[in-house]
Image (tube, rainbow, N blue to C red; front, side, top):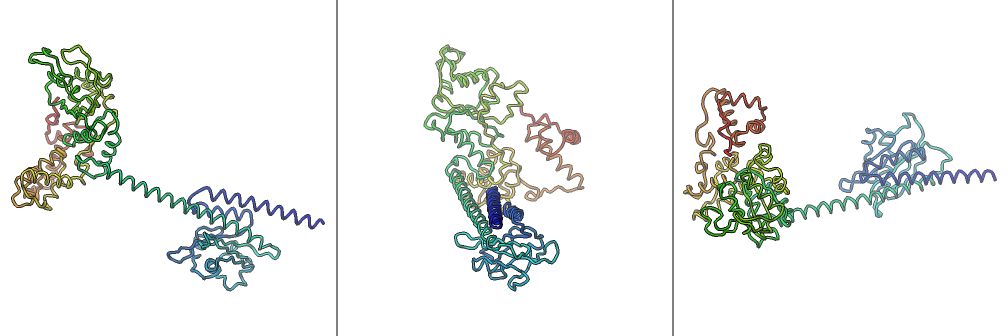
Amino acid sequence: MSGVSTNNIRKVKWEIEELSLLFEISGILDSSINLQDVLGPVLKVLSKHTKIVGGLITLFNNETGDITVEASYGLSLDQERKGKYRIGEGITGLVVQTGKPSVVPRTSEEPKYLDKMGFKMNGRERELSFICLPIKLENKVIGTLSVYRIYSDNFALNDFVRLLTVVCSLISKAVKLRQEALKERDRLLSENIRLQKELEAKFHPSNIIGNSKVMQEVYRLIEQVSKSDTTVLITGESGTGKELVAQAIHYNSFRANKPFIKVNCAALPENIIESELFGHERGAFTGAIKSRKGRFELANGGTLFLDEIGDLTPQTQIKLLRVLQEREFEKVGGTNTIKVNVRIIAATNRNLEELIEKGLFRQDLYYRLNVFPIHLPPLRDRKSDILLLTDYFVEKYSKMHSKNIRRISTPAIDMLMAYHWPGNVRELENCVERAVLVSNDEVIHGHHLPPTLQTGESSDTIPKGPLKAKLESIEREFILDALKSTSGNMAKASKLLGLTERQMGIRVKKYKIESKRFRTKM
């Protein structure tokens, strides 16, 4: 009776141990989507609960036909590398081939046991039992679970095989879940790529040329802001196409069928800019012979584009701030308050933050304008768009001037790509129009381009003389270009050239360059 009771107690303990093992393995398999992260810990936990001295999990590669070790316990990396089988080879290969478990009570007595990995228990000769079970997924063998135990006459191998079968089932389910997760991830990724391409194809403003990465970001911002009434501030160097972006925003908005009114704040004299913006009453000033609507009133319901906003006078800035805040104003010489529903898009090639520091631009107005900023990159930062733009302008001006330009020569292309384009897209357009006009053989050659684009090779003006003099000439030219590009700002120019301000100052003094002559006049 006591014997039966002892056996029952052992059985209950074993069942509790089994449940604990399976629960722990389930937790490990659920902890990561990456199989490599979980298979090793599964074998380690298996050894803790069942006293196996070694174990390995192999996976079958359908493409190569190889069965290789994916994770192991008690084996060295060198032993793992040796554990490579083909279908039908050794115990592991047979299990993959037949889909049936194989139990080898004594490895020394089984001729099919190849011992490729030379597994030893702490380097000592010990009789081992080897158990190999298939891991199946939808009745297909995808790998094996194998374990080593020290041989024992009274160990219940059948119960142990049953337990390992459950472990294989858990591994199989984990593999299936991961395959499904990876498929879903790939599907979502593919769908995301498709939608992104569809969006890019769907929203590409027809008035703007360019497919570069930086321009794709500009298109994304235009698409985001177009369907709202948010105030937009477009920044960028002269000639980058700020007006085109403003038009794209307007004509893709809900105001597309309403007026798009443009004002160049730099082009209007100081004494009439208020009248241009807000209108005037008859007799408001000398020459005001009749009442006149301003640009704000003309743009009512639509969009007002304020180009070169950084050139507004301080007095006009105050009035503009009020319009942005209250959406109302009075005409010059008038007393009636006029309310308007206008969307404001402003643009500038100047650094408004620097103007604020100098007291030339109101900070509160800047914050009102800079709700949704869009920066247009200079042409030198979107080199991949140069040929697209060139082709577009060649076609445009060929039609305009009744010329038949069939191609651009390779030297001309090289010159276009090598130039730094301080005047940006506008300068490129002017160069192409000139080249179209002077071409007389249906080809644009390098000599058709302006002297500013000519290289030493193309114009046969490669400098001659000592190397030091050549290098100094090149250095001086780079410094002049940098100062020209930054309107004489020494700090920015030195940054462009990768120099400190001190190094820049030394070179400017050395070459007797007057940086002031490059500064933009206020």
